Length: 128
Image (cartoon, rainbow, N blue to C red; front, side, top):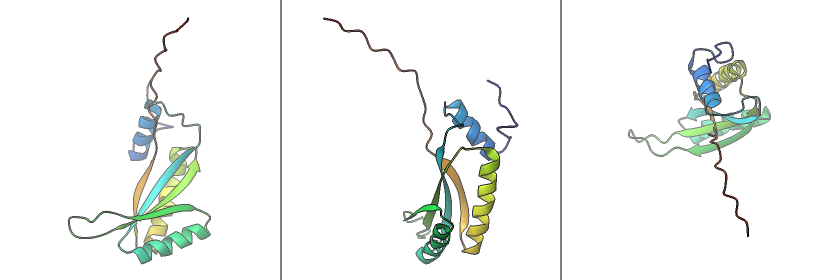
């Protein structure tokens, strides 16, 4: 199939969505999309998480493994059930980038579980 650049623009988000489509994901179904913001301290991550909870967002948070420079970054994930459309993802990225800046964090991208569907082999008929 030829890529529809209206639906899958030639940018990083369009590339990810196109790959999901090519892998057999039904992009007209709801997916849980996870957007991430990185913070240097737990306190900053918690302040941002509280703000997002007040915006009725579903969030999770964890401390990343120690980096080579000794930093222990905090990752705040925002989980949104949505139909993954390019324009909506771009809008949410802009919103989360703005929020990240307000809380001295850095927007780090998005992702979601992608399932690769393969044709199931037919099981042999067993009769007695």
